[in-house]
Structure formats: C-alpha cells, structure tokens
Image: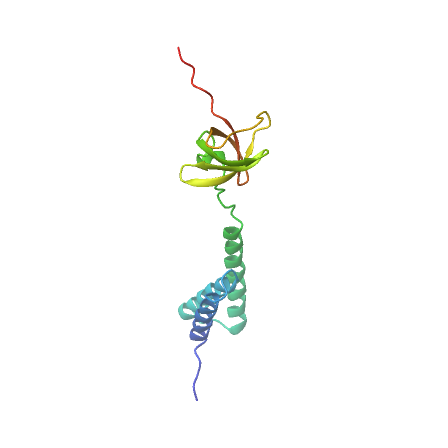
Length: 148
C-alpha cells in the first residue's frame, strides 16, 4: 500500500493551483497555490497534525490573498496626465468640427477639444496643449512670437 506524505500532497496541490492559474489569469488560485506550497514547506521542516496543517494553510492563504488584493488595487499610472509631458507640447490641427476634432502631437493623433475661450481653428494651424481631460487634449492656438 502507498503511504502519501502530507508535505508532498500540499506541494503537489500548490503546484496544481499554480498551473490552473495559467489558463485563468486574474483568479486568486495563484495565492492559494502559494499558501499550499508554504504549508508543504512547513510540513517538510516540522511534521504537524492535520488540524495544524489546515490552520497554517488558512493563515498563509489569508496573508497571500491580502497581498494579492493590495497589489491588484494599486492605482495604474495614468498615461494622459500633465506629468506625462503632453501639456505645453505643440500640436497641429488635422480636422475640427465645431469645438471637437483631432490633432497631431509628435507622431500620434489625439482627440482634441478647443479651450473655452477659443472660437475656431483651421486645418494645419499650430496649437498648444493646454490641458488633458481623460484622453482628450484641450488645445489653444500657439502664441505668436513677439518681435522686438
């Protein structure tokens, strides 16, 4: 008769949960798999009764899931923030219909909206990005250089 070593069962279960995470990303099986691997490691170092193994697994699962939730709820870095370097950059009008249109900044086309005090713009006119509203650039005509 085959005798199963509890540590190997925990380790195998942990590996199985990690493998199951691959086709189902975003699930929390990875965190439970890590908790099972940790329980198997504890069991290898110091054999425990089954009830203590379950307690170790529960504690490790709670800790690993808490870490996973903390990592998941980090705010993603917003691309379209003034800090990203768009405000103040030069833009060229591609098309405008009323107050909304498209401009080119560098090598990218962006949806744009005219600033509230700007009446209108012409195709190929040079603009300056005044602000960013989500993914829409708020633009205004470039100031003409003053000559002395």
